[in-house]
Image 1 (cartoon, chains in turn blue, orange):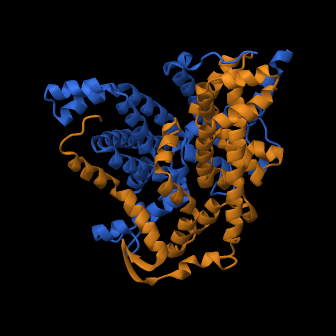
Image 2 (spheres, one colour):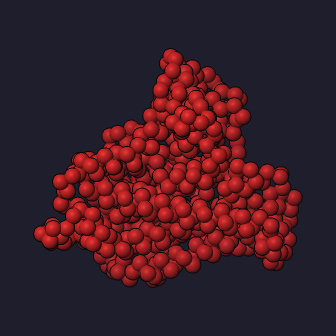
Image 3 (cartoon, chains in turn yellow, red):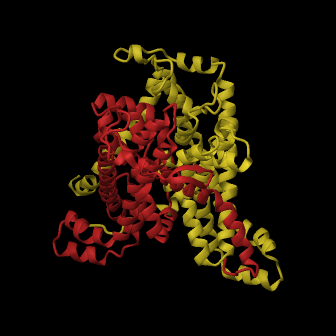
Length: 296
Length: 275
C-alpha cells in the first residue's frame, strides 16, 4: 500500500473537493427531492416519498415551462451552431491577420462579466433615448418586454457561438491542403468547395458541439435570470432550470419550496449524469487514457 | 482556409456586418458611461463625470463602497485561480506520471464531470454550505467555484504534463529527489504555458462569476463587483450613465487583457474550454 501513498497525496485535495461539491450534491439533490424541505421546515424536514414528483407533474404550468425550455434550447442551439459555423468559415476565407481579430472579438461576449454583458443588452433594448434599437427602428419601446424571446436567444447565442467557432476553425485548419488544391484544379467555386469539401469534413465536430451544447443549455439559466428573470408577465421566459432555482432559492411568495425545487433539479442531474456518461463512450475515451510515463 | 478566394474583401464585409452588434454594444457602454445623455450611439450634451461618482462617494444609495466590492472580487478571483491551478496541477501530475489503482476510472470520472453541467447542483450545494457553516462567506464561494472548474483544470494540465519529456524528472528522481520536489522544482516550471493558460482562464471566469456569489452570499460586506452592479439593475429608476460607468470600471481588466492579449486569449479558449 505504501507505494501508492504518493499518488494519493497528490490526488487528495482534488478528490476531496470533487467529493464535497460534485458527489455529495448529486446524492443530496436526489435525497432532498424526497423531502418536504421548505422555509418553514428547514430544521426538521420529513420524508414524503414521491410527493414532490407528483406535485411537479400536476403543476398546471408544467406545459408552459416545458415549451419554454424546448424553445430556448432548440433556438439557441440552432443559433450557436449556425453562427459558429458561419464565423469559422468566413474568418477562414479572409487573410489570417483579419480573421484572428474578428475571432477574438467574438470571444468578448463570453469573457465579459455576465452582469455587464446583460446590462448592455438591457440598455440597447430600452426605450429611447438610451436604447439603440428603439433609436434605429424609430419606435420607442422596451424591446426586452416586447420581444423577450429574441433577446434571450440572441444574448445567449452571442455567448455560445464562439464555442462552435473555435472548434470548427481548428477542424478546418486540420483539413489536408491537397483537398483544396484538388478542388481548385477541378475548377470548384468557393461555395462549392465549402459545400463539397469543408462541410463533410466538419460532420463530427458539428455533432460534438451540438451534443455538448444541448446539455449545457438545458441546465444553464444565468443569462435568463439576469435578463428577464423568467418574465415578462407570468413565466414568459421561465425555463426548467430557472424554475427549479426560483422554487428552491428565490421564491417570490416567501416560502421557498426546497424539496420541490430539488425534484426539478434532480431530473436535470439524472439527465446530466446519463448524457455525460454517454458522451464519454461515443467520444472515444480509450484513446484518451494512455499509460503513465514514469513508473518508480 | 489555405486557398484565399479572390473575392475575400467581400467576405470581410460579411464578417464586419455580422460582428457589428458586438462593436455597437461596447461603443454604447463606453459612450453611455462618458456622456450626460446618449441617443442611441450619438452623444448629446457634455461629458458627465458625475456618472463616476461611485468612485469618490463612500456609498451610493446605501450600498457598500465600490472599493470593498473591488477588494472582494480581487480576493475571490485570485484565491480561485491559485487554488484551481495548484490542486489541478497536483492531480494532473499524478494522473500523467504515476500508476495507482483505479487510475482509468478516475480519469473517466474527471472527463465525465467535465461534461456534466455543474449548475444543476446549485440547490444541493446551498444546503451543503449551510451544513458546513460556510454559507454567506467568501471562503465558501471560493471553494465551490474552484471545485466546479476543477475537472476542466485537471484535464487541461494533464495534457500539458503528457507532452513533457520526462528525462529531466527521471534524472532528478535518480539523484534521490522526492516526488514532491520533482513536481515542484522540475515539472511545474516546465508547464508554465499551461499554468498561465489555466490561471488566466480561472481569473477571468471567477472575475465575472455571478450566479455563485448571488446564491451563496447575502451580506453586503462580502459583495463582489458582480453583486454590486446587479444591485442597480433591480431599481425602479435605472441610472444608465452611472451603471455604464460601474460596468466599464468592472470590465476594465477584461478589456485590457482583450486589447493586449488577443492571440493569447484565442489559444486559451481553443484549448477545450466549456461552452
